[in-house]
Image (cartoon, chains in turn green, cyan):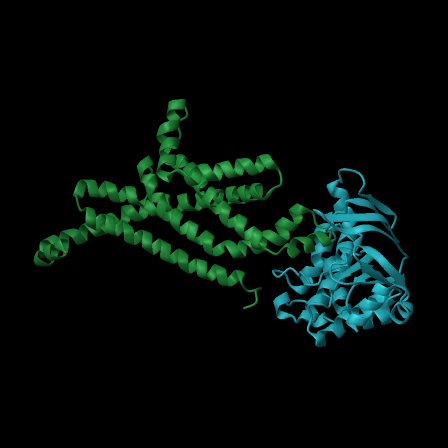
Length: 234
Length: 245
């Protein structure tokens, strides 16, 4: 309210803010395009692979695999993402292991996506009727062939909505990468704000950019669901 | 063709198969009947190793599986399974694949036949079960009877030595039962060895070479349909037939 009344009464101030909003848009978009989006995509791809492996380990009858998967999920889910990022980026150098900002972020976020999504994928695999496995076996398929050809394609359809949710969360979580010095969208906003002191304007602007990205993704999610549901009775 | 010796199967404490001995000749159609829980479906599932028996041996087409030994090799299980084709009560078609792809899946992925060749074969099989005009339909676009006929074509696709049917018409609307039974009769006439678990007594009468009556995990009685239906020896068989007719 204060900002609003302030601006309404002072045309010069309004112009100043508008110009800052305009000039800061480009660096922020650049941060989004060069870091936020690629970081999200790479992390998500690695994370899903990790998640499938973890889900399979959890479903496996091999005790050791099961135990490792449970431990991994428990550690990641039971500790804050920001703490994990700090351990990787600021902590590991104490062991002589220095990892650059971007790879640190990729490792941290991938581990996180892998753990959370493994539960989604495990549930999706379990939701496919046992008869589908048996049908695969009955035409001579091995476990791996049935999994790959019959079960996972169907599980993928079931897991699209929750995984899209994870992806959208991930995009927003990448703002934490600003704290391990990745110059992504939010870090750009912080940098500009620290010199101009226009915190409200710049952080709101950053919020809007995140919102636009996430809205576009929700739209793509809807399209993807329709496509994958073409073979399902409605 | 099939030779089963002393087959045992338990689920925990519950002994479902209590030593089954059975020999089936090539080209014969065997219909298994019996009350629910008598072990007939478990027996059928043991034949293609969807259930692994606890003891006994199964021989199909000269290949022997011995369940008395401790550990079974995974590959031998997979190989043995392709000797039989299974038709399920609930069809279990792959919902994300068309009728054609359902039938092609086994030949292409398991038998490593070229896609063109497999497609040709699959179209032939689907034509045989009367679905030439439905090859590109997804399962949900087909009626129950049509789905089950795709199920039969899919099982035939791997060129099994024996076809197994687990209550193939039980999930169908009454008016759709006939089309599935007709396909099964055609198969029987072509000389396919078949083991069928069913409650369709007309089919049993008309198509079976032999009826096997299962009760409480054993084969209680066996014989030609004429004999079993008109003059059963065992009291239990008599009572079962009275109840369902």
